[in-house]
Image (tube, rainbow, N blue to C red):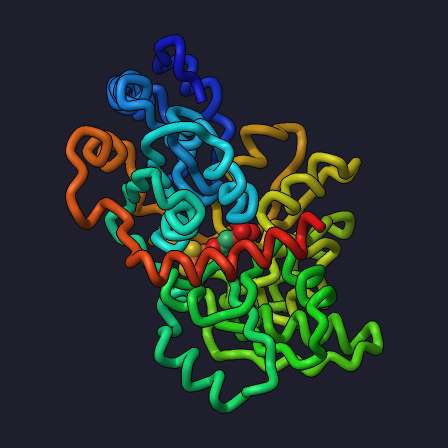
Length: 343
Ligand code: 13P
Ligand code: SF4
């Protein structure tokens, strides 16, 4: 996050040396930092010259977060950050649906995606044609899409949500019939939460899953709890209902970090992508991380080399391009989320 002064390898190593999660991709040595630093400094110079900002989701590699990013956060926070900047170019180190959301909200800005594999198993699980079919099958339902969807899918839906506001938005929608897509796990979790409250909301959902979060099971939690009885289990709403039922806190990636920051507990099991565990180790080194985490290959396909390349010489594929008519309809869906969330 240094832009004005040049980053040195020892400074970067000082930040990253606490990280010990996942495989070798998340272990840092001074030598590795020496390799990153020339790229980091070149990106930061070019960024200023081109009047660009770099937005990074918490799941991308730590050398991006701590070396070149101007904004780091969850998908809700980053959507707002994308609107708050007065720049020509946004480089969005994340996955395509996040870059598309930034473009929907900022049609006049150039949005570049430096991920070499910018997919997402949730966003890729449903098409706009499928939503149109579902709307014919469920004509009285309000269609709520997770932000992890393409612009074309958002254009077919009534309101978008993120992991930070899904329960609140669904509660505020003045229709008891809700069709949630595409995450089956989140759909079930929302349905369970409303059932528990005795709400009569009828919540139908689609069958998509996140390949990272669907892998966690309650057994993992029970095992960790026997070893570390004081552990706090923090999970993402894309996890299964069994995981959610056995967690101490469930929230978006920003909300998970916030919970840990405010908590006086020491041991945490974080059931989400390793990027968040890395942030915990850098930003709260006095807390202890127990258990394991999982990598998202899409988020981890962002690399400093790609950021430099898209800043220097963006190709058509790097640029987000959304047809005007889709952008206008998708914007209505995203704006509805802001209205419900911010009041
Ligand atoms: P957040 O909005 O909570 O960061 O989640 C995004 C995501 O893709 C989780 O897998
Ligand atoms: Fe998509 Fe899952 Fe990766 Fe998040 S972690 S970007 S939902 S594949």
